[in-house]
Amino acid sequence: MRTEQLKTALKQQSFAPIYLVLGQESALIEQVQTLFKATLSAEEMTMNFASYDLAQVEVAQALDDAESAPFFGERRIVFMQNPVFLTSEKAKPKLDHDLKGFQGYLEQPPSTTALVIFAPYSKLDERKKIVKLLKKVATLIDVQKINERQVPKLVTEFLQSADVTIEPAAMELLLNKTNGDYSQITAELPKLMLYAQKTRVITADAVEALVSTSLEDNVFEIVPLVLQRKVGPVLEMYRSLLLQKEEPLKINAILLGQFRLLLQVKILFEKGYSQGDLAGVLKIHPYRIKLALQQIRQFSKAALTQAYLGLEAIEEKIKTGQGEGRLLFELFMLQFAAEDIA
Image: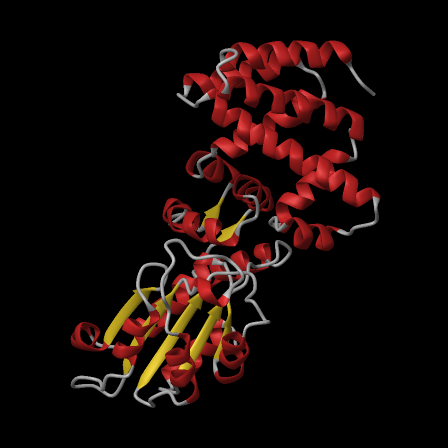
């Protein structure tokens, strides 16, 4: 079930006893939460709604609430958040969850409660008996990350519903600034729409002015300049980040992560992996994979490896007190440019 289908069902007062909200698209997760809460009045929210973080409290506490009869209303709505025990991950802190009691609830849920289990994961551990049972009895709501190819269409449709259009150049810039992340884009749209309330058109200038550039985005712009061995522009951008009070270790860590990604994409792409395969294997947003593929075509594996190892050496030296971060990076850049590996 998608969120639009859920919206229709809840409007018709058609509730299932158990829902499994599976996926990591935060904008859709928030939308699902809003839809359920909207079915209760303000008075009912006080008496018949509860939310439990299962990373902090035991499942038995949530089940006690879910098994209670509603007060002055037809239905209770209970949220269960972060059920780490449904995955292969280890919970911190470790809680003694009553999985036998949870199984009993799943087998005989009360009809007066809608239990909504939010699992913000890409997948669950299908080997577990409780997972198999949950998937059998629950109504599944799909909130997985939206494919980057779908994002422009969804954004355009959303804006059209509000009688607003977006210029192609503005859309491209918005995707670049957010790495094509749908949830991040939806968080930016309200201020862009407010800015365009007179013209009803979102321009590239508006996106440039209103959508902030993260440290990751700034570092991403440095990467191709490093590989092109353009010492002056690289050091100018690096020093600009330092003036913005960014820490050398943090800048280096993001650079190192980006070069690690480029090297991984380069190796796997040469082995025949497609863009879709790479996103799944590396667990990276498809838009980042797309940008990485555009960059690796211009540079050799040897050059990527050289840069990666140089940045890794900087990190080790900073952490062990063998030098000052800014000077270490400047020395790395000068040496990297001088060696010029093809």
